[in-house]
Amino acid sequence: MSHPTHNLDRREFLANSTLAAAGLVVASLAAAHAASPGVAKPSAAAAHPTKTTRTLGALKVSAIGAGAMSISANYGPPADRAQGIATLRAAREQGVIFFDTAEVYGPYTNESLVGEALAPFRDEVVIATKFGFDLEKGGLTSRPDHIRKVVEGSLKRLRTDRIDLYYQHRVDPTVPIEDVAGAVKDLIAEGKVLHFGLSEASAPHIRRAHAVQPVTAVQSEYAFWFRGPEGNGVLKACEDLGIGFVPWSPLGQGYLTGKLGPDVRFDPDKDLRSQFPRLTAENRVKNSPVLALMQRVATRKGTTPAALALAWLLARKPFIVPIPGTRREDHLKENLAALDVNLSTADLHELESEYALMTVHGLRMGEMHMQAIDGWPVSTI
Image (tube, rainbow, N blue to C red):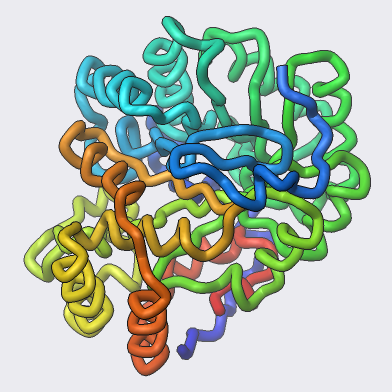
């Protein structure tokens, strides 16, 4: 797969823009406005997870989590708040105990939504949120004093006294990763955070951070049509160190559901997908062989492409826990149906052998957004 060269100055970009992914946010949107913290090698139970639960390091979660970002931001106008709360509570009722948000989603409004939705059963769920953006000045910042400051706002919005899993949203090249890990280690000692995570970090940074404070989970984009973590050493680092892996955008920003035909238009002011080369109308047509393969196998298995895409991820490694996002209860039900999809060796071979002959067209995000990805352009493999 070819990728364009990048001529943007990384430091200039970081100084002048605010963005995020794992759910991504652009500068215009930002302007708008008691588990053990240690991580050991996976236990025998972790190596053979049950159908409905898995472990990220030492943290037990549901085998499929719920990404909350799209309820509040970045994939079109925010959903009605009552609808968002109902969807998150429906997820809990259907067995989901792992919920993902970030201060930058909204910004702030998604954390507030998650906090209200999960308050009635706070002690029954695992909440992950993220730090790492300067929402006042723009750009990345993971200075220890900034981390200590923003954790208080996240705790308040989430209506909780501790954050179960606290990710660095993007690696800040101006702050040694050891300092970031040390700051989170202090928060863990204070009981404000229980586990440390990294998002879109390269394998070397994962290993360096883990040496200071054990990393419980790494979050990166990973899906049937994007295999970056397999080729850039991230999955291997997680397996070597006993770290869980959390794929964001496991449904290809909606494309792998089969519901984003070439006639679908993304609002350039409210939907970040309008900026992703892989999701242009032209490339949605060019990438249709990938979707056709998934649709054919899904039909044979009596399921949907969305459920198949999630089942494929679950079959990759026992420490993988995808976090599909949705604001609709029918889509939630469809996502959770992945738990009932049993992929045989023959099914997996068919998917892999045919995919290997295909070319996926278009960069997974716009080049400006990719500038904030640790290890770019290696991460685009």
